[in-house]
Amino acid sequence: MEVKMEKEQERESPKVTSELLKSRSGEFDLESILHLKLRGLAIYDLGCIGDCLNLERLDLSNNNVTHLGPLASLKQLVVLNLTANRVASLEPLSSCDSLQSLNVAGNLLNNVESLQCLAGLRKLESLRLRDQVSNLSNPMCAASTYRTSVLDVLPTLRVIDGEIVSGRGSDLYHLCKDIDSSLKRFLSNGPLEVTGGAKPWVEEGYWDLKPAQSSIIEEAYKQFNDVLQECKELSKRADDTIAQAERALDLRNDPSSYVF
Image (tube, rainbow, N blue to C red; front, side, top):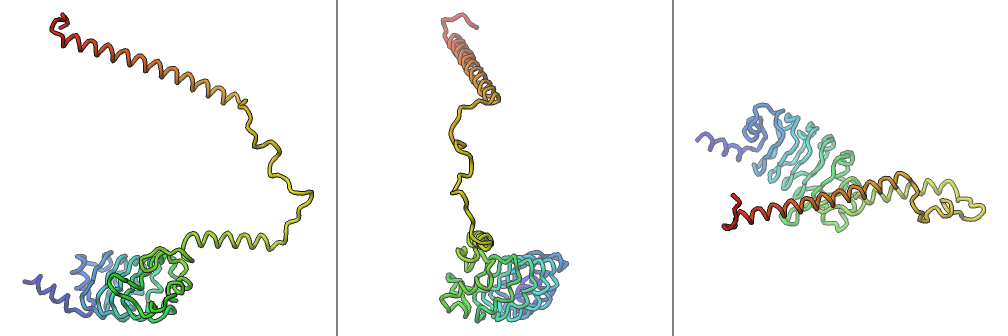
């Protein structure tokens, strides 16, 4: 009966309290909580959730959260799910330095500028603003080019809306960008002056095949042949031994033989 009342209280609780956090996590100390799932509890006030200083994974999906202020103290937070809430500003997340994955599909983010506060999060690699399966989105996603605009603001992203980035946030993009920058610096020193015509990088005949003359190679080749010959002899001895054993077994199974 008591357990049932606690569950009903959780469903009706609009504010995060220490009692709620302890009951959902099974921990007695808020700083000991590492993973927390508060999905679908009609929460609109995050209350004391900021006291979970070591929290790494947090699921707040399907609630009524509007302000993220208490999350600003969660420096160890790696994964945050805010799907289906009423968030219009992500500003408090700017201090969540460890954040790698953020899901805000189904909120009230109006424009790409609302993501500018995340630009300092160097570890942020995955961002979901739209979930077609659940039919969740944000007002900014109405623009067909919103993904490109998001990458302009957050170039470190590798995944947007569950799809791997193939443009500015990809490894290939950064590699090509670094090569391009190096070439520009090299060419900025002026054109190369070539005198006496083009010359090969190595001396003539460098790549021609030549017979091996190294005594080390010859010795290694000799040792290899010796080992190969020894293996063949061992194989022959093994075959002879097996043949002898088979003949002995045949004699034992023959009733007319005198082998006991």
